[in-house]
Length: 499
Image 1 (tube, rainbow, N blue to C red):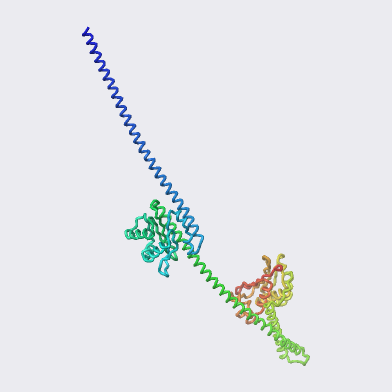
Image 2 (spheres, rainbow, N blue to C red):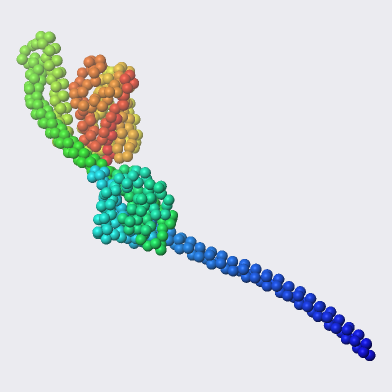
């Protein structure tokens, strides 16, 4: 029994030991799994911590970026307002005054100083100072005057300097001086460089280190300097243009005064000439009438029979007296028309009827010269508004001249066309023509073209002058187109109706 019990006890112990080993093995596996899970959880926690730190850093950077973006947007709006303000003036001394302190504050700065170089006085002149007490401003002005050569060098080299950009080593002492003299921890100083006129510098800065400037701020000030340069350029160009305009107006006024004086003198001379011609013409009429009368009495042989030679000479006297009377009448008419003493009795006239009358009047001369005459007056051009006797004289002179200078078997034609409010009448011939250089002068009094034809054809040189005065008295104008050997066309305009 004892042995059996001992055996059973031993087996129970072995079983217990086996069971214990199994439990311990299972626990070890579980512990190992727990350690692995703890390790995994630790890694997860570390990753979450890194992600949290990254999120915090990203959020801070985003906030910083947002702040910088807001600052830049505010600065851009301020720059736009400054640009709009300085563009509203073309006065150089007003440009800097329009840069108000609130604009500067929106740009992120507290202080500003602008100065331009006066070449005549060889010194910088302050244009604006913001953020400085009077005694501080005096110190800055004194410093600039003492060190003007160094700042002129910045202008010549077109060099921007700021507290954040890396300047050449030689500018390091200048940066330190600027901080001290202008009382600014951060600053930007840029040259103002208009193409013409005064050049200078613009300084902006801030004393607060908690709001340091960045590259974006520096870019804004560079843009501001460029806009001030452009505004100064515009003001300079405006002043230059204004001065030129004033000088031009002065010259125009002086020239107008001179021309008016000359015109008045010409009018006075013309009046004296007209008065003289009128007076002389009247004085000539009496003796001419007597000469013609006595010549006519002698030719009638009422005082006795005359030899043939005497009668021929008296006939020449009579004929030349008629020519002189005709010339005197023309001179008197020109003088009266020129002085406005001739009253034009204008009425609606039939142009076809007028040309018909002239053709009948000059028919003998046309036949004698074997000249073909024709007229083309369309229905819409037949009514003109003119003085009957004066317009007849125009046609008589123009057609009479054409007859004189048109060879046998030639042609003379009268045509018309309607214009806006007027009728253009053309008198064309197939005569010898007029040289180009004489075509304007032929309307002057006593002018005759110097050619062999005029040596044969006699005239006074008054007919075309009289025609010109009559046409212009009707409110029209006259001109000629001609070339040697191809005939001439005299054209003039006459109103269709009054006004």
